[in-house]
Length: 359
Image (cartoon, rainbow, N blue to C red; front, side, top):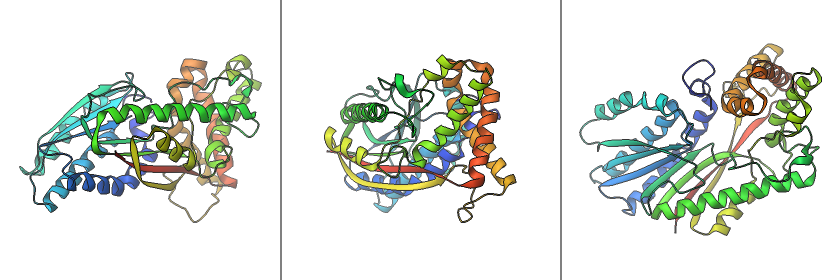
């Protein structure tokens, strides 16, 4: 993710992620009520936010969890516990920007009164596809918008041509390779957490998915085909080399519901308590869900917002492969393609939220 707090930082272009997190708060509340009623934690509750990134969304999650725990304890006439909040992301995450938000975070907790237990926040850098915490140490795990990121590029994508993700013109082996890598990664994620979460502990995971089995559905591929078309435009203009384009693929996978269920059942350490889905507009600033076609002016605004949202997530990855000189032009072209698409048709992001309990 783009670091800092500037105009093109993740911190200032993460409304989509914030909207998804707020959608999930009722499921977090239900899950925490469950572990509180079963006395899974006593004097201290340890919470992990995996793939926390940086910016206000991270502490939004932590703050809501603390409020929910306090509310549940009050309802059950029990003393609020101390809080250990562990924030995890990759080693390159902008933890410094995140740490600068902690004084205000601590002050707000203090303002809630003496009935709130003290909160201790720590950073735990590393990949969540490996071990991060000691055995049986976590009571509640949250992760949002992260499990769709793969640990590595799938093997065998050499014949995907100029496609940068699964596309309608991709050969069958590309769909198989992406699905296989997701299955490997998600199973590994569950295995690692099964060592770290206490028996009866809970996880709430939210990530982009697709609404149907067909991997070329619009909510899975349309977004990336527009970015791919922007790169093809630059190839035709001599701004990108063909060998660079043909060797680039996005390390993401949006699974269907059955793939998620099958991985949980196969790994076997967690019970699936709930699986819920919801949709968000491509541009989260667009709140007009009734009018499914934009005016030209509105589509241009939504195209720019969508372009900035994707840029803050993908710029470091694109720079490492193509170099920094193409970025401004690439996202201007992408902005135009998105605007033209939205003028004709609106699509939405599809999300899945799962609640898991450690057996």
